[in-house]
Image 1 (cartoon, helix red, strand yellow):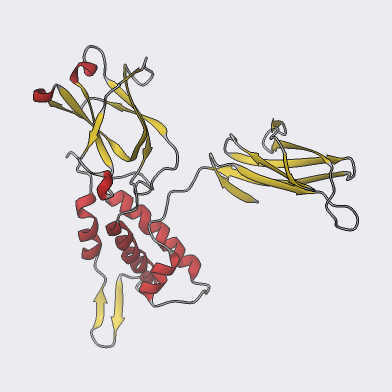
Image 2: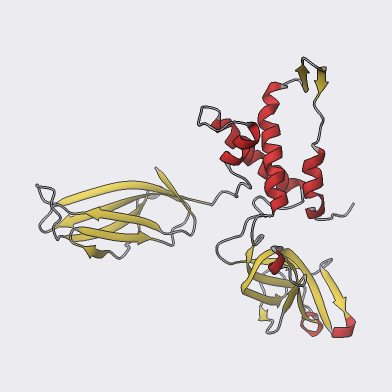
Length: 293
């Protein structure tokens, strides 16, 4: 069963042919059925870009398993079905299988690829956790979404300019950025018409926006929450993160050779594997979000 990311359109195609295999015109309808409930949830429109070719895109579907049913009448009598899954997009891995295999000196496809791939995924999530970020935070979202932030502990006032900076999660782009203030997590919401953001030139340097600036007057009274609509993440995966993931993934894969925490060498004898990799730490240390003790 093919899996599609939540929010992506599911492309579907039906080819109408006669007994000789030649394309013919037909009357075609498409239905999308939820396998969980057995009910029809969508009827995508069908286009006919070429003789016998019928295309559709199923969109707006929630996560779950679905069946599609082509009902064909006219020159061709047919009912064609299939299934697919819509799932939440998995967080990005920060390096590739060929890159890690290159570090390991492996250039061919073999049965170890699955273990190396698992090491890459684990290393990527370890990088996220080590820097204090959510899974996949160093990738860029493809669409905007809204997040709410309580103002307590997040506001840095600038009295001279009558503005306040609000610390937010990493934002990958200023396009589509919307800032609103409200009470609690439910509003009502008032849009800030003239926000600014920083650090200065962050996006030009491949770094994310990490704070937004609003007029201090927008945060008076009962206002205690901001709602930010943005494309979250980093503009591109930082080179430091990509390299740290390569090193850590290779280390995790090679860990099978030292299951007891030690590795044997004909030159040096038994050597204990260090708990951390200093190069990995050095690469990501400056990207770590500071916390409070």
